[in-house]
Image (cartoon, rainbow, N blue to C red; front, side):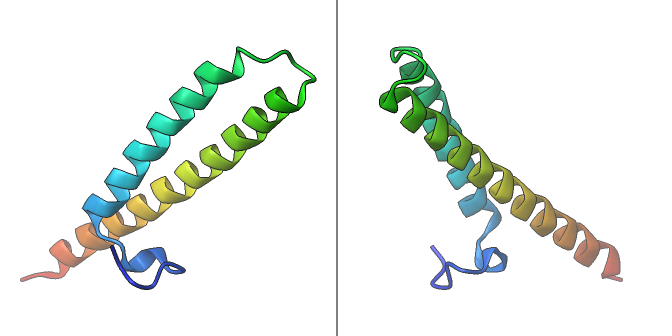
Length: 80
């Protein structure tokens, strides 16, 4: 993986896709486990907060992937 983890511009298409796949898998598992806890319990709240954070992360990765894809499309159009 790229050394500069603060800038998603340095990640490859494949790295972003792999991260998105992993995040999606984790989200699914957390959703399944959340139903085991009663609403209002600390465990339920923890799972809710995890889901929110994971969904934000997935959204940011998706956005980075789209930016990378659009940049690659733009470079292809610039070629003679």
